[in-house]
Amino acid sequence: MSDVVKQQIKDLLLKHNAVLLAHNYMRDEVQEIADITGDSLALSIEASRTDADVIVFCGVHFMAESAAILSPNKKVLLPRPDAGCPMADMVTAEELESLRAKNPGVPVVTYVNSSAEVKAHSDICCTSANALKVVRSLCEDELIFVPDRNLGRWIARFVPEKKFIFWEGFCPTHERMTVAAVLRKKAEHPDALFICHPESAPEVSTLADHVCSTSGMYDYCRTSQATKFIIGTEAGILYKLRLDSPDKEFILASPALFCPNMKLTSLEDVLISLKTLEPVISVPEEIRIKAKAALDRMLAIPRD
Ligand code: 13P
Ligand code: SF4
Image (cartoon, rainbow, N blue to C red; front, top):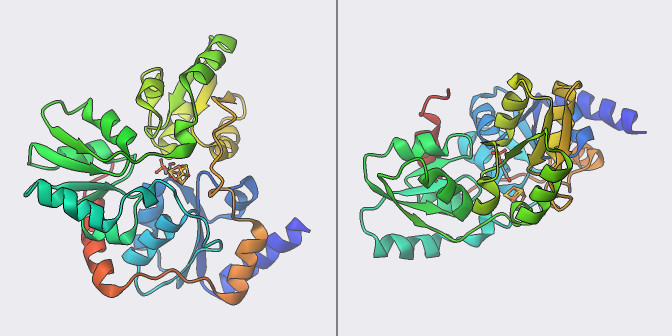
């Protein structure tokens, strides 16, 4: 059954000159059929460069919205429009404007886990993969960082010369990973390295051997001499980690590392979306232009 669905998806992708982008947290079977899998940065870059006519975005709403901002002439489909990101909903453009008004002249760095409206009120965007470079690219010695308090505080450790004004947003999935859960896994597997995402609570990140984006985890685990890793991010990451390094062992740091939104999209949803060419994600033009400026400024920063 699922092989039939996969073949139908492949045929429709071809028919519509469509590309299927999937975030690293998607269900295994969705990652398996994707043309490109990646972290938020890699998927944004792909969305800005692809010559496909249709982008099928398997991820959450803000990711498809970024693709629509970057590629206005393409049809961007989000098979599950109800796949949101609670962190992105934790700051509104009005709230950001009132913070700006209290801090005139202070630049705003906005994590891509945010709405198009919030991006439109920002100076520059960042992802977990480039946040440090983005912050270092600013000449000002003070900045507003929204919405993720944990990513912001993690980055701030490396730039003590800059003053951060944080927003108290967070990822509920990563914050469910407790110090007790991590210490338990470390005790069970004393020979394993602990790697976590910077959305984790600060007391968890300080326990880590390495803190990085989801794609950063692939690179780190593939090239590390170590053979055993405790993974502190959403469970979907395990699919490609195990595929990339079948001889290595990957243990999820906590059973709570499960993002319900990232797990919504099924193969059937992808198929329906390709059959109907809906739901289309679009952004009003005046918001899109301003949000694109913040994303473009981020994308102009060279990758490692
Ligand atoms: P990455 O950019 O590291 O893939 O993270 C996106 C995300 O939503 C993490 O929760
Ligand atoms: Fe949002 Fe967290 Fe889910 Fe990522 S894992 S989409 S930040 S709720």
